[in-house]
Length: 416
Length: 168
Image 1 (cartoon, helix red, strand yellow):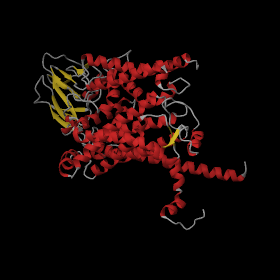
Image 2 (cartoon, rainbow over the protein chains, first blue to last red):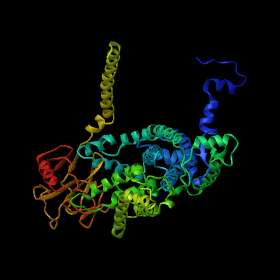
Image 3 (cartoon, chains in turn cyan, brown):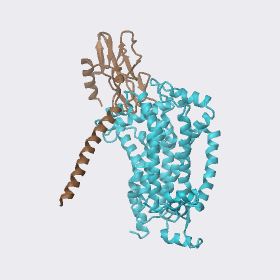
Image 4 (cartoon, one colour):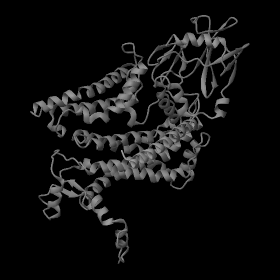
């Protein structure tokens, strides 16, 4: 056993047992961040904070929520909204944070894509990040189901039905996932379990992994400049702060993060207090009814792009059923981002504005995702259906041409 | 290989065997915990009386929490091998969930039209437009006089579902 001496303070006592000084250095004061990064790199701290808000507001909601199809709707819309002191606030904070967290995740993701932060050496950061996106999506969806309104019910119906597309076992799989022939009480209770326990704890684990993946390859920077972090850190520690290309996370870089966080929280609470309804569909204030479908159903805004890819294929192609083409395209849309580090064939890490064709590719992708999102909410009839079809095809084509695009850029630069 | 290594290997293999059996048994148990409960399975029967149904407008019944459409065809509607013929009357019996993603289509101008993704089905429950990959599904049923017992299967059901399977 290590040798323990009489401690002169609580801090010293803890330090001897938990090595807090070293821990603090590794995690905070000697965790090095490049100087050359902008506010877009603050999204990690924003996400961690928003996740914290979700957990805390969720705990308060859980104290009154009832995961039973007979009670769920009233426990949310009457008990929590009308009776519980500040219940409305916790609900709106939870609902708005659930929506805003996706806005920040998307900004975080596309910052990574723009600056090439998913490439060589940083693949695990990208993969763990995409796993977080997937688990957040599952958590968002399972939470959306809990108020047991019409949109909740039919969202659950559609999403669980998607598993019917699995060959051979599809139909049995759908019944198994629901625990009933229909979306019913068993479904609600198990989704409640997923939403309040299994998914959050999985998310926390992956957040830990995501943070850890950063420690070896370090954070990218605006110019994707490669430098020796140890060397730069030595300069900083020697007092040569001006020449050093890095700053410590705490207390230097965090100050910028907190400034961005301040602005974000003003925006967030503005939404919570004045525009909480943007994240709430009026249809979801009708109690779930398994005998009436709402005229037009669509997911929350953050799933619209992949929903539109799913339904964009509304006619059979080359003998393959429209339904299957849609499902395949949907599956493609949900895994293709994961493969980005290998689709990008450029050997160098560079920001998009230094890769001319990739730069165009990036902004076409942005535009296409916006088109998919907008049309995902519109009824899929007439011209809308065709816009959706072409946008979905464009989405797939963009990823198919990415290896070629990135190779051409590299060749022009003389790197290949 | 020394004796000691063999001994360690044996311990390792023994543990792997115990863990594999235990793991597999746990997975089976966990899978079954998610299966529908016996009360859910046993409650899955509904009896529908066909006699009072009027020709030309479909009625909706609930079976296993799902809507079931029963349409008595009027004289001008097409005949189909899918029709359930009872005496002089022709009926269409179908689960009222769009085979695309499970929305409930509504009856409009002699067809079922799904608002969600624009799928359409004719009066014989066959898909005529949009993303639905197959006709509306046939619920298992047994004919008992003028009554339909949903959840059991009879010869009429077997004939009709065999025909529908060719229509996909």
